[in-house]
Amino acid sequence: MGILEGKRILVTGVLTDASIAFSVAKLAQEEGATVVLTGFGRLSLVERIAKRLPSPAPVLELDVQNNEHLDTLAARVGEHVEGLDGVVHSIGFAPQTALGGNFLNTSWEDVATALQISTYSYKSLAVACLPLMKEGGAVVGLDFDASKAWPVYDWMGVAKAGLESCNRYLARDLGKHNIRVNLVAAGPLRTMAAKSIPGFKEFEDSWPERAPLGWDLADTLPTARACVALMSDWFPATTGEIVHVDGGAHAIGG
Ligand SMILES: NC(=O)c1ccc[n+]([C@@H]2O[C@H](COP(=O)([O-])OP(=O)(O)OC[C@H]3O[C@@H](n4cnc5c(N)ncnc54)[C@H](O)[C@@H]3O)[C@@H](O)[C@H]2O)c1
Image 1 (tube, helix red, strand yellow):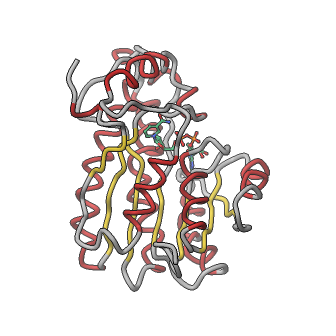
Image 2 (spheres, protein in one colour):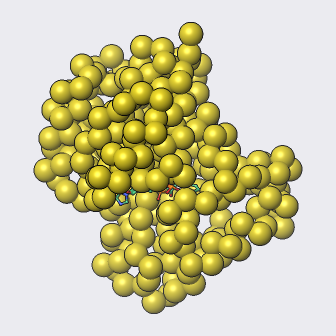
Image 3 (cartoon, rainbow, N blue to C red):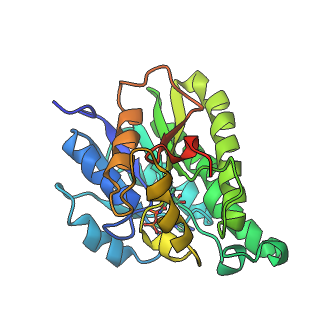
């Protein structure tokens, strides 16, 4: 019996089969969950990728900048599952001007886009799913360690710092609904989002050396395992937490 047996999980953020969300959805199904996916923009691509999962999973459209998509999400998810036990936020975006060393010149409009999609949407998604989580459950988001200023990560780093704070406030406000809210801070992984960061190679070169356990830039499974574990019954008293899945690099200086 899998650790998500009988659980119903909404997974956002599948774009390619390299997406962290794809790995989470696959593992969740392998662990016994019923999975519903949301996709953004290129829905036919997401539907094609979804066919590679062990079981078919419906794909619903969700642009987190679209209030109608958010307002109707619970009803649309409700056509496939009666409730939700877990929600995965695997969404991030920043305009090119907000990344790659342009920190001092980025306009507010571009910063606002990064913050709305990468930070505020964590709250929007959790609130949109609340009507389906009457028995409690778990919300999990994907983080990149925001305790330091990194090369090239720029306003996405600020967005992730906001996400870490948002995680604590959501934990505070959703605890009374018996909903746990936690982040998984992953090391660098070669996904579409990562490829769109100019200078991402700087992380690729240094991370595997810094991490005491080493780090495989192409392996999303350790990150997916942490997400699945946090949605299981094995973390019943953990909320507002950040679990680092980075080979241990966050603990090492230099
Ligand atoms: N790849 C890494 O190195 C790494 C490391 C730590 C954390 N993360 C985080 O993991 C999460 C998933 O990213 P990934 O690396 O799997 O890349 P990815 O490109 O596969 O996934 C990013 C997802 O965000 C979605 N998205 C963008 N704008 C959206 C919008 N307006 N509405 C809804 N969805 C939207 C995209 O469609 C895509 O599915 C992100 O939060 C990212 O910051 C990534």
